[in-house]
Amino acid sequence: MKERITLGKLVGEGFIDEFESFDLTEVQGVLAGLASDNAIDIAHADMLQQKTLYAADLLIEFISKLVKTVSFLETKINSVKNRTALEFEPPEGKKATADMKKAAGESSPEVEAFGLQLAKAKGAKTLLERKYDILIRSHHYYKDISGAQKRGIVSSNVNQNNLPTNNAVGWE
Image (cartoon, rainbow, N blue to C red; front, top):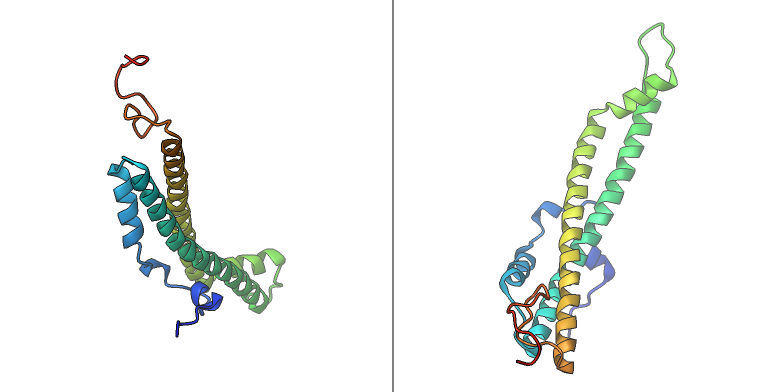
């Protein structure tokens, strides 16, 4: 019997995922292959489409975990700031102002630690989103090539950037 895959398993059980240990080996392999690979026929273009979609699917799982982590860390930072501000005790004989409480909440070591984690998570999320964009654009590129080849439009004098590779003019 197949193992049951739930959304909770895909997104992760905890609030903070160890995003620094996400394995991007397969994604990097696909991206490295795309950098040097040109679609030579319909089957090859279709295979490259499948590779890009597979790598994009892997990134979707990682990005969703990062969105969860970023949201949790932002919420945690706000709650720690509020708690610290409420617990702030001014020096003797002084009255606590709103600015003093706000400063106490923002300068908490706990807030700073969560802030550093949040910065790393947001950086990782941006990196993965950019890689995802590259993969999806590549998928559409290879899809266009495959479709054009199926219609018989693409010839061998067109390179990956859709620029002529020789100076041939007409049917000569």
